[in-house]
Image (cartoon, rainbow, N blue to C red; front, side, top):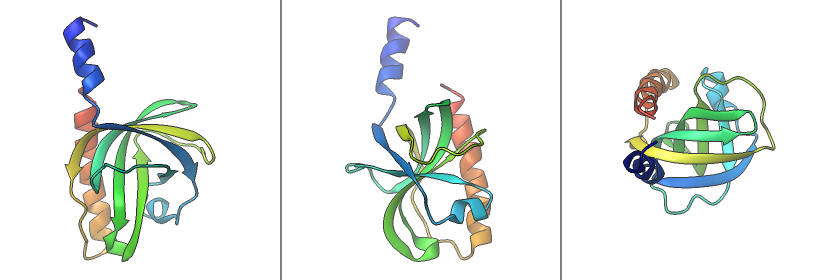
Length: 134
């Protein structure tokens, strides 16, 4: 790449997070969006839904990340959950490097799990369009 593109690429990420993938409650998988639950120090990041790149042993993948509590489930615990696009497999215990690219939306409370699922589908489409630029 040229110098300008290299500088743009290097400065495009809001934050880089590194953490271990652990078992979660299984809510994402039950809705058809299995997530990686990542434990680590994520201070300094605002709660919300983000477009991210995730690097694992198997490669680098596009992801939709939720950071914060899960208000639809009345769960106040702050969590990092990432749905990887175009990925299948088990990666528990691995280290994940999460490059936060863009905030997609604020967290919100949905009236039902079905309403949340429909919104996640829209989030995934938006994440894909954002990350297709990279």
